Length: 247
Image 1 (cartoon, rainbow, N blue to C red):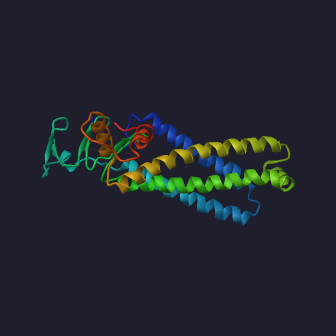
Image 2 (tube, rainbow, N blue to C red; image 1 turned 180 degrees about the vertical axis):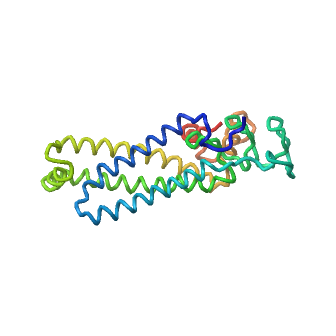
Image 3 (spheres, rainbow, N blue to C red; image 1 turned 135 degrees about the horizontal axis):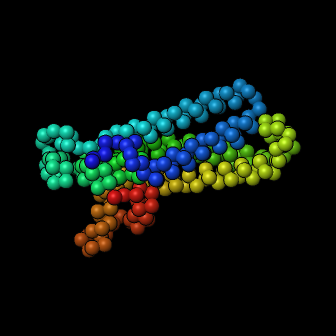
């Protein structure tokens, strides 16, 4: 049965894992970073701003995930150029059939397992905005976490007092530093992953290519049907396979 959007079951393990991972990063920010802000008013202001940023990311995620990118020809007769035997419908020139979703997607870019949905003409902007805003949020979050980790050594006395005041006298300061370092490393891993994904799409946009176009060009180059790919082809292909999970 054709998939309509990314929240339909079965959920993809990549989608579930990404949501759990991102939720853990957000929880870590509230637990490790906001707790150290001693001034109540500042803590409230920062908390509100961070929560609003999270709501924006959530809205973009839902927009990309819940949008049905299917070709209009699947819902009725259109002036399509091609006939899809699998969908038994006439579809547009830019539409491709996704085996994972069992439907033709208008302006097909790729099937994203992180969204459990195809990315096409109707939801590419929300998908790319999601990548950009998530990256921006996590970079700021990482910078703050690293700053806290540095001053936990350079201003050890004042930070130890702050930690005891916020978490209680029974909290081990070295243990808190270790947990903060572990949290920062998980944020670094997420930032590196999204930087690669964002860079990949920026290059594709600058070349006027979709992910699908790039995959086809790479396959043609391997089979000798094309002389060459852009200079960054091999690295981009690796990113496409590792990050986008193209089908």
